Amino acid sequence: MPTPTTRREFVRSIMAGTALSAAALAKANAEMAQSITSLNMKYLDDEAPDGAYWDAVRAQYLFEDNLIMMNNGTVGPMPKPVFNRLMGAFRRQAENPYDVYNFLPSFREAVRTKLAAFVHAAPDEVALTSNTTEGINFVVNGLDLNAGDEVLISNLEHPGGIGPVQLKAKRSGIVVKEVPIGPPHGDTAAIVSAFEKAVTPKTKLIMVSHTCFITGLITPIKELSKMAHDKGLLVLADSAHGLGIMDLNMHDMGVDFFCSSPYKWMGTPCGIGLLYVRKDVQEKVWPTVVSSGWDRTTGARKLDPSGQRADAMILALDEALDFQNRIGRVRIERRIKALSGRLKQGLAKTPGVKINTPADPYLSAGLTAFALEGVAPAKIVDFVREKYNLVIRTIGNTAAGTAGVRVSTPIFVTSKEVDMLLEGIGQLARNRS
Ligand SMILES: Cc1ncc(COP(=O)(O)O)c(C=O)c1O
Image (tube, rainbow, N blue to C red):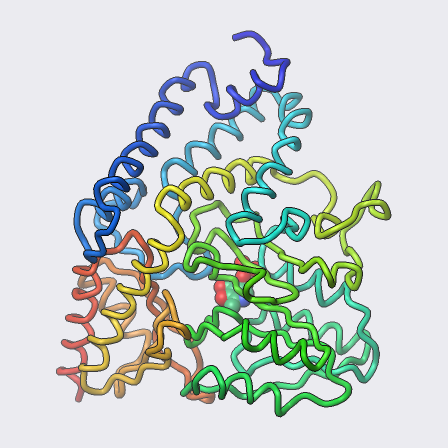
C-alpha cells in the first residue's frame, strides 16, 4: 500500500483501517448505515415500542449472548460502526504514527462543529474534554471565585461534581451550600423555588445535576437558568448521562456551562467528553491544562486540555454522532421515554415498590430509580441477573432514604425486556417475608 501523503488519502485510510480490512470495514459500516436509513423511510411515523426498526438498531450492537444491558451508568456499549472506526484509527497509529500526528488533529474542528450542531450550540462554545468530571473541574477551577463566595449544589450531586467545589472551598474559601430537592421531587416550580430561597447576595454559582444519578430526575435547567440569570448567577449543569438520551438544546436551555460523557448513552469509547460554555461567559473562565498558544486561544476551545491525546476518540465521536443522527435525536428521546414510562407504570402497580423518579416525562428520561420494601437492593440486582441475564445497579443510600436500584432504558432494549424485569420485581414482591 502506498504511504498516504495527501489529506484525502489519509481520510480514506483512517476511515477503513488497513489495506487488508479497508473494503470490508467501510462496506460493513456503509451497510449498517443503509439499513437504518431505509428503515427511517419505512417507519417515519411509527411509534410502536418494538418491531423491525428497533430490532435493526439492536442488531448494530455487539452484546455477548443474551446480555440485557439496563445500566448505562459508568460506561455504556459502543455500537459496531463506532467500534470499527475506533479500531481502524488505532490500527493506523500502529502502522503509521506519522499520519496520525500529522493529519488526525485536522479532524478535531469538523467533529467539534458536528457535536455543536448536535446540541444546538455554536462550534466555539464547545470544548472537547475527556469526561464530565474533567469539565466540571475546569469550570470550577477556572472561575474567579473568592473567599466567602457561595456556590449552591443540590443534595443529590455526584462525587464528580462535589469534589471540585469542595476542593475550591478548601483552597479559596468559597462556601458550598446544599439545597434539598427530594426525593420525592416536587414539580418544576418547586425545584426552582428551592434554589431561589437559598440565594444570598454572596451567591455566585449554581452547580447541579441535569441528569441526577441517584433518582433519575431531569432538573429543569431552563427554568433554573432563567431564575439564576435574573439574579446575576451562573449555572453549571452536570449532565453526565444527557448526551444520547435527550434532544439537548444549549441555547434554548440558556445554561452557562454544561458537561456530558457520551460513552454512557451515546456509544463512544471512554475518554471523550463535552464541555459547553455559553459565549457570553467564556471570558469568565481561565483554562486549566495549557501548553503553547494558551494565551491566544479564544472561545471554549481554550478549555480543550492540551498535550497529546488519543485522537482516535475524535473519530469515534464522529461516528457515534452519525449513528445518533441517522436514528434521530427526537426518535431516540421518544423511545427512551416510552420504555421508562412503561417501566414506571408497571412498577407503580407492584406492591411494596417506592419509585424515586418523577413520573413527569419533562422531569425524567432514561433513568428510573426505585426501592422494594423488605428486599435489599443488591438482592434485586443479583436476582434479575441470574434469572434473565439482565444488568441493573444498586444506587443511593439508606440514611438519605434513597437506597434502591436504578434501571436504564436505552434504545437497544425492548419493551419485552422491560416487562421481563417487571415480572422479576413482581416475583420478588410476592415472595417477601
Ligand atoms: C451525574 C453524574 N455526574 C458525574 C459523573 C461522572 O462521570 P464521568 O466519570 O464520566 O466523568 C457521573 C457518572 O456516572 C454522573 O452520573
